[in-house]
Length: 126
Image (cartoon, rainbow, N blue to C red; front, side, top):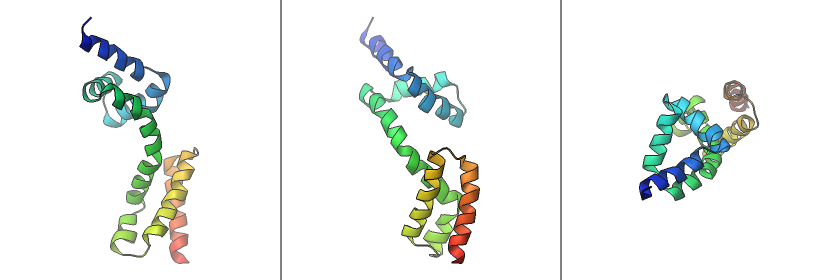
């Protein structure tokens, strides 16, 4: 076996772990609309061993940030906070953190967004 084949096997050992498959491979391949094998090939080609080993913890820690970014757009906080200045940056962060925590605790994103819109309106009406 040459060095490239050994490296590929080592990378596949990381990617084939249960948590990797469940947390990264399955959801991201669905999101991109590609097969799991295609995503595996992308990761093997583009990431070295250190990056692969560090990816899962980074992925886990980024969930909160990614949900907040999505909420920022879906709640139109870009208009309410960034353009119209109806909400301060701190108020916007407080609202996003509250809703993101609900999603991370198991509430569906759609339900949390719906409840978040109600909360946002109540907040604005104070």
